[in-house]
Length: 89
Image 1 (spheres, rainbow, N blue to C red):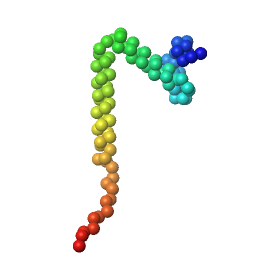
Image 2: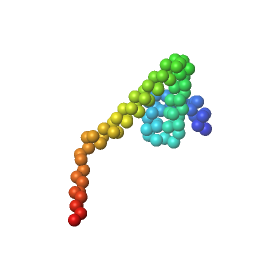
Image 3: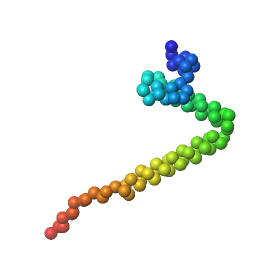
Image 4: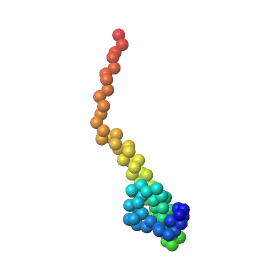
């Protein structure tokens, strides 16, 4: 049975698909991504443009938050002792 047939006959929806993907079964991660893409396409088709706007806002928020977190890590790090430079005579 190929991947498309197994996806059509036994769709990994919900916790069972996630459990298989975490257990690293061979095709489970592709099935889970396919189901997520199908659900996203269905939400965009049924709800419309607000879903696209919401996803864009969420992505922007996540990107800016990660930029702040990654740059703030240096602010809280302990300073490293630098060797003193020797003066020329």
